[in-house]
Length: 297
Image 1 (cartoon, rainbow, N blue to C red):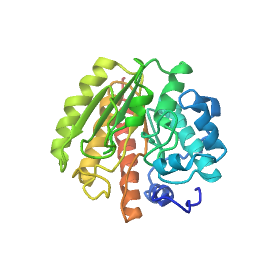
Image 2: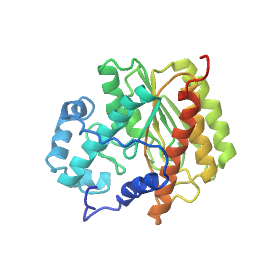
Image 3: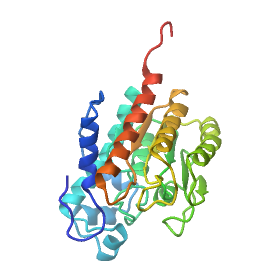
């Protein structure tokens, strides 16, 4: 855990609390510690000058304001490891079917700057590296955070081997949306059933048409009705239905899924952590339905 920065509004406490909740669940999980993301992998997606500023903790003040906190040496190390975590989750997913990064999902980071509590864009970096390493030919990024994945959309806009789907609250941050391959803006206050109707309409035909080799899933829990920065009205049950649906649609087609934590905000950090932990545990449970060998098949 990086020490809390002296400036900024983002609360880093939830990441430690998520791990506490996962361990307290007694679920059969295996923890892996990622290596830091190599500099050259980050520079393949982000501006090398910006990467240098992060690595040396010399990010200009105006960019730190856009990020939401100062990029200290501790934060620089942390974001390298959280980006490495999404890469590791993808590798583990290809081996086991599903794996989760208990951090990251940093979908607002752009080419030459961070934004919206995001420093480097782990989804875009991992997608690029999966293809560059020959692990995948086509990557589908499913972004169900309540905020549009504008950075991911911008960083992958010129590629035909990465498809970005963003289903988000239309009136929420960012005010100026980027153009994902497929954007679905939702009205304020949408409930569980309305959300699932949209997801059921959008995701299955997209998977069939794009035919990805792997799914990277930004599983933010901020569509929850109690989220401080959300504008939707999903319940705990609705988030579980959402997450199980994503896993089922991918795994029944034999596709691995790597999830990243994404957004979740509120005064009660323990409650937010419980939502994140419940999300990962539900996905792992759903994955077991497709990972256990069936008799005779």
